[in-house]
Length: 322
Image 1 (cartoon, rainbow, N blue to C red):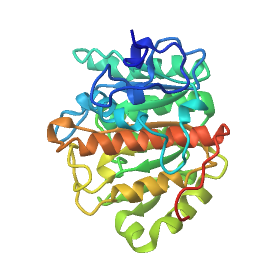
Image 2: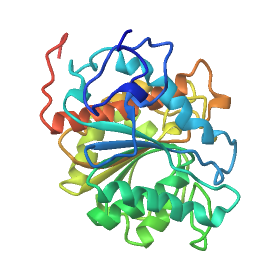
Image 3: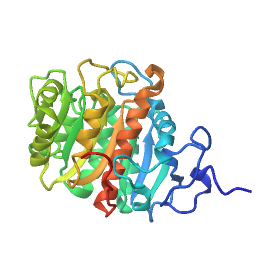
């Protein structure tokens, strides 16, 4: 009897990677062990399958499942360009999905916040797979409760700073509300890839996608890094920050966005910041083609895990030209 395969259920240790068939086996993010035992974990990966706050196309309740499936090949080889397996350095588990009752929408936000608070209180960091972008709001509340006001690095086509009465379940209002409630420190925060307009910037530094295209990766990183400084940094990655050519499977696509390579280079350039959490949201599989949106989302999430591994001591190896 072979010991290979179905690591999501058979693996005993939250570190390391074993052999799988990339096209088969139980699905978890990057083949991590499914577990609710978070005490030994450095990172807890979980899904938030909710899309009741969308304003256009639905379907991102299926996002966590699709991102997990798209992540299988990431667990096949050492990470690129680093040349290490991040799970040799960080202990990561897949918690599964936060259980949400969509028939009682008044409970959704508090359910997500309680889910996050329990994980953070155990000392683990969170990598969250959405779900629509509203799920970031209760996640940020739980993170700010632990770390204080966060520096938000928001990859997005939309500002999500439209205003409401403070109660709407709307995936376009969270970050204005976060600033107003003291959860987000806008003076240290940057919005990356925007290409929709709002009359009020709420104090965020806005780097539009045309600006990034013209000025490049290094100039973009210079702004983000100087602004964040030593503050606790939460990254929220809405896949619609990518151009629809690179991420068609999302609810509110806007042309003119970032290419997947640009987003990866920007994430890799955040090395050394005080990274406390990340979510990847708005993957809507019914509108995806050849799983390219889910693959992009999974890769961005995996990239963040590699950054954490570097922070904990994993040493990149030289590969190709610098």
